[in-house]
Image 1 (cartoon, rainbow over the protein chains, first blue to last red):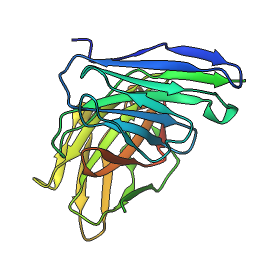
Image 2: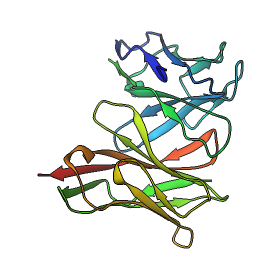
Image 3: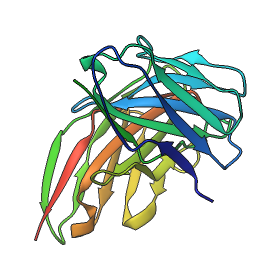
Image 4: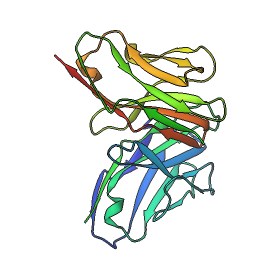
Length: 113
Length: 112
């Protein structure tokens, strides 16, 4: 089992460019999440999905879009990157029940110049 | 609304001495509580979780945490620090599977 994988690991963008981050999980989890991690702020939830074909906004959704066309994949898109989106992005997945922990990917470090 | 406060942004201990990382939470419901560890340039790994069973929770690598409802605390402890424990630690509260709130993190330094 690979667990949760993220592609790419690093990326540098110029302001206004677009990109898509891919998250994949092989644990058959129903729920998937995208977080951003900034110094001194812990992780903040961007968007999440409770099943194939569904998405919902988290704490900091502005400037991002997501899609979950397949149960195992969760895509995070930046349509027009801004320097404020420079961050480390983590994908996670979990089973449905409230007591189940989330499993995290290794992260994507994004720099927007 | 739920929230988490980690009371120390940085804790420094000597190898072989006890570790205490403090966490207070706020939740309207009976929450689940978690501690995650993040080693440099790595993802997050679950250390332990509280899910309304025993209030003293044992995790991996000798860590444990005690849920104290009256104090709304979930402090993480370890009797004897090891150099490999140096990392960032996050306390997390959740009252729904899709809503986990992370603390700002505590960086643990272990001196030889």
